[in-house]
Amino acid sequence: MPRLPKLPAPPLPSALQAPPPRPGEGNGKVGPIDQAMEAGVTVVDWVDERTSLSGAARWLMFRKVPKGTNWFYTLGSATMFAFLSQAVTGVFLAMYYRPDPAGGAYESVRYVTNEVFLGQFVRGMHKWGSSVMVILVFLHMGRTFFFGAYKYPRELNWVIGVVLLILTMVMSFTGYLLPFDQRAYWATIVGVNINGTGPLIGPYLSDFLRAGPEFGATTLSRFYAIHMLLLPGAIAALIGAHLYLVAKLGTTAPPWLKAEKDPELRKAEA
Ligand code: HEM
Image (cartoon, rainbow, N blue to C red; front, side, top):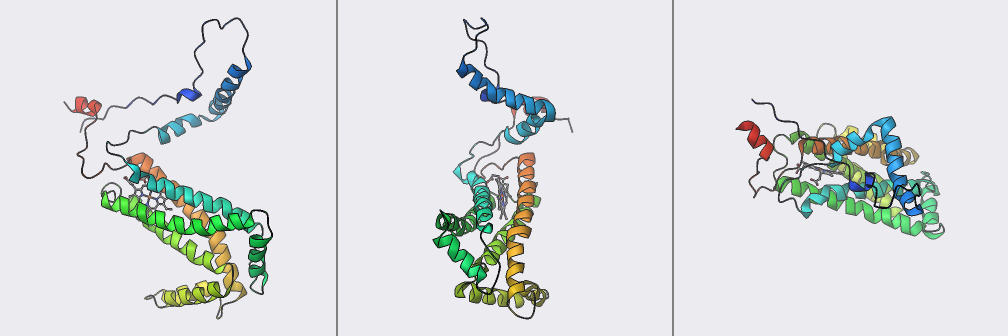
């Protein structure tokens, strides 16, 4: 098989390139606007000289995308931004939340909602954001399915996606208990019992989730730890792997378009 020619590295975006000297410049005087414009370039240059990170950024961001790429391709990024929004709002909620089943959890959530400045807004963003993320992840999965993006060579990315889907739903499940009101309590008992009916691992799974023979303090702190430490870490790492594969393999062309060969490749094959 002929070796594929190496495509040249894409240029830096024009905003990060030093502007060419303008006529009349060169008299040693630099205006404040020029200085401000150059400041960004200088900072990027400074960091790049010490880290060579611009190479990685260019590898990640400057990609040829197939013809026919459309709005449905933004659903993966939309899911990622929903996750980031959940992470940021979750950090603020964690500043007030107490995983104490003897009234403390409920009281801390009541306090955030009613007393804290913008607390209701941040809690609302987190609560509605969780539904938005679940809806987006399903739409994104539908897009990749109907565009055939699960096929060779992207099977592994599909499998990582399936794990991300499961983790997203476990995130919703564990978060639902945290306000520790009547609805959260009874809905979680139902959910844990449903898990218990699963084959083979079901009973172990429900024991693990309950963290003891009965629902109580250990259940709540276990759900809290899973919700705010274990799952966000795992989801962030898997999104990293998912995006690495997207960047490495490129995205799939819509199935109704026949892929065009790159002229460079056609030349190499001739
Ligand atoms: C937290 C959840 C997820 C995030 C943040 C995420 C993010 C992304 C992003 C940003 C892309 C590239 C742009 C795009 O095609 O939309 C992508 C592509 C892809 N995702 Fe996801 N994804 C998630 C879940 C899933 C799920 C549940 C599946 C399937 C079970 C999946 C399968 C794929 C596949 C196969 C591709 C490659 C698409 C192509 O080559 O055209 N992802 N994902």
